[in-house]
Length: 371
Image (tube, rainbow, N blue to C red; front, side, top):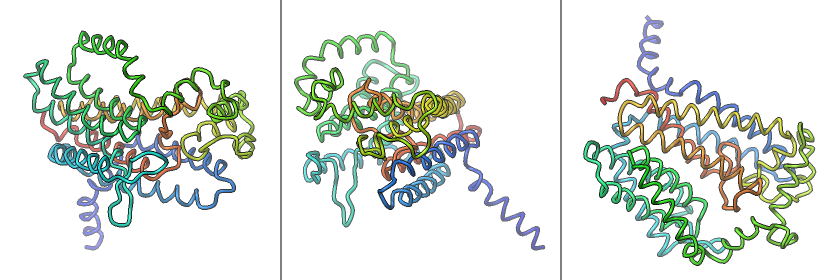
């Protein structure tokens, strides 16, 4: 009797336990293991980092499990409230936000500070996917115009904090939804031409430090001991790794504290120095597998809403990895974007956990959602 009761309990609990997509979960576990190995080396002399990182990973998995158990139908129900709350929080930041390091990005609630711009990374594509799902079959130019407004409102609020890195991530995820919804190529080409023509205006609207970052990207040697110091040292660390790297915990640039933010935004420089080109190829392969799995889930999504949401979520992974590796390698300006599932940080870990949970929910419910 007890055996039958246990089997009955397992049958009831199984749908909630076996929610993790095996291919996606395998890639994430390997990435997080690589992250722990790299962070151990990068945080030598900085007590508590590994313990905090393990806590962040545990929280990320808990959030991932919760989100994976939320059906796409329920995600549609919370899309509008999530978007409205996110916009209101961003407005609150603009009015009464906490200023840290010259930027007004945080909102003090009770005993904690939250960063609402992180919510926008997922709330905006969720809202856009909901909107285009309800407009399916009657897409006109004004439909895309309204979608653009829904995207640009939070992007404007995030960019004025200022937080260029997060605003780029929100734009990438949101524009992916608009593109997958059927935005014509003529419109995309027109936007590209308009964007190129508006570059002088955009340049004049940048903050001084943002213009300095662009100029530093063009010629970091113009101020090698000042603004260009960090990127020069990062490039040296990557180049000094050679083919196979200097070996784990043997990276001199990181351990002699030449590499800035070596546990967060610039952890790729630490990894490259210690594991070399071979390690970089392995890491990029992991990201390709992660993005490839996301694209497969997108292609197999059961309806318009889930396809748009899965595509945008996959674009978040791609943008995180591309922008971080690009800025650390000196081919993009430094914008403060962490390397997904590698960098130390609690907020980013939770955001990525939610994103992974969304993909797992869509994959799990692909046969249950009505098209």
